[in-house]
Amino acid sequence: MPFTLATWNINSVRLRADLVGKLLTEEAPDVLCLQECKSPVDKIPVEVFADLGYPHIVARGQKGYNGVAIISRLALTDAGQRDFCAKGDARHVAARLENGVTIHNVYVPAGGDEPDRNINEKFGHKLDFLTEMRDWFGADPQGKSILVGDLNIAPREDDVWNHKQLLKVVSHTPIEVEHLGAAQEAGGWVDVTRADIPQGPLYSWWSYRAQDWDSADRGRRLDHVWATRDIASAAHGSRILRDARGWERPSDHVPVFATFDL
Image (tube, rainbow, N blue to C red; front, top):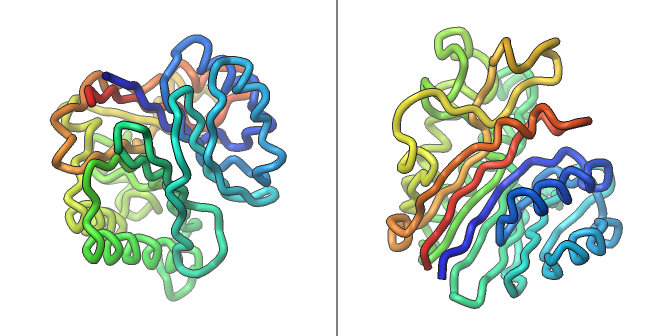
């Protein structure tokens, strides 16, 4: 039975509950993974989503920071979380569907402004987080799994508006791309979006700083959908909902979708 999954950095689930409701009503994914919820779990407006036919949720939260949630109209069970870098941050949660597929929802640290761990602790945290992802996947290979989230890295040249200009900008530096690639390879993950749409620019994030984000189109693909090799061939229908960036009081990220025939 096919199901459609979406991932979205919502930048405050309480502030933008109406936008989540709009997405669930208009696009109707079966599972929606949110990052940067910025809310304790008990403050997430679950009744709003339940009223729209999404009664199932697995989440980890913090007040004002981080936070990940998996909202679903399909039954799911809590499959735990990993405390990356032992910081107590709510940056990962996993849930298992009744068909045995495990969904990992990950929010990788942004990394600050300066791509040098010697002067920027946040950048060092980001690299350490990715290294731990690599080591985890290498030691505990995943099967029948999907990993989604705001990974805060645009790995390919056509995942950013200007490759050369962004080579020294956090999210597209060679060392970040290398670390993300090592984590992906260690887990045998397939980039579902690029498997479906192999050529051309793809962006899922546009800065709030742009006066006219649409015409400037200085985007980056920071949000990803991966799948393990045993189920990657079942994925199709990948798309990025660019229009959501133009909604009222939007997140700076937009939802990324994929459908799996499983």
